[in-house]
Length: 213
Length: 213
Image 1 (cartoon, rainbow over the protein chains, first blue to last red):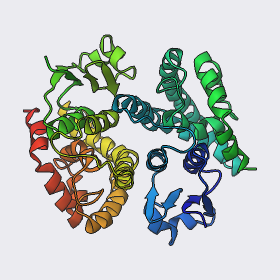
Image 2: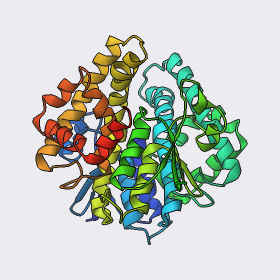
Image 3: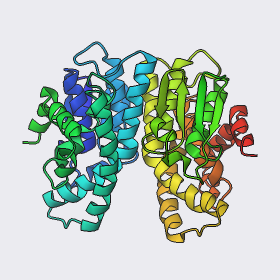
């Protein structure tokens, strides 16, 4: 029995963020599937793991966590010496990772998540896409990606010359959006595109995608 | 000349989060006022400090940061031995602080910020409050505060028995909301109310509020 359990499912962007971190760290884990169509995430026993009723929830022995970005940070720090280094202990370099992680969470993710829902998740469940929501959020995402284009002209990754959690957190929504009309937002910005090609080619990420097949 | 500069203004919730952290740490800083009514945050030289054109921006010597929660994390770690300890180095305890910091950023803040804007900031500038937005976001905040009520029945602060960044990050929006009709959401939950009374009474926080006078 693995010490680490991820309660969730393979199509959830938040769960994918955690899987990617575990694969980068080469850490074994058990996926405990949560049937969201049956509403298992809104009932016990899941609700005791995450009172907000959202996947994923995470266990490492006695430690129980939720919120995907708190889980990835924990894994990156607790297993700092395993697999890919995803954080840097120097406090000034760590601050730059935090900065771009916050940009992902506060600026990139709100627009990217709404676009993912409209253009990838809704079609998967035969629901109707709202064109006005798409237009509004593509405009918001374009503003964010203009900042990324400038940043990624200065350094290969968001927080500097190495791949860190700040990059990794973007992978799930980028994965979905590159299969939709919104891919134009990434393809029209050369440094953003090179970054997308680089980070989506990572072997750990490809294991996350393979789980969906 | 202080090594640390905060570019912002005394009424911005994001800037107040940074001021509170600096006062808790007893660190001297220079406030560089940004006149947002004149649009200074959307122009050079500010835009070079934060390409998103939002306050605050932060300098500690050569290090330049934006995103308030990245700044508070940096201060808490870099100046760990000064003033109030706001983080815990043990990775499992740190994970619990991260969890509740993420809950603040992802669940509490979106509703609290919209309510703050409608009920506190708009009246300050003689703009009209949107009652539908208030109703929608009071309902969302109530769901979050139900989770907090359960949590704060188990521990004095969100991440355990000591005040940490996870609590501190809530102070600016709570400060504004306790002066509005939304205070009922806090006052009707006894453990939440005790927590609000406790954290808003901190001397460091009172220095932030005094700056507004």
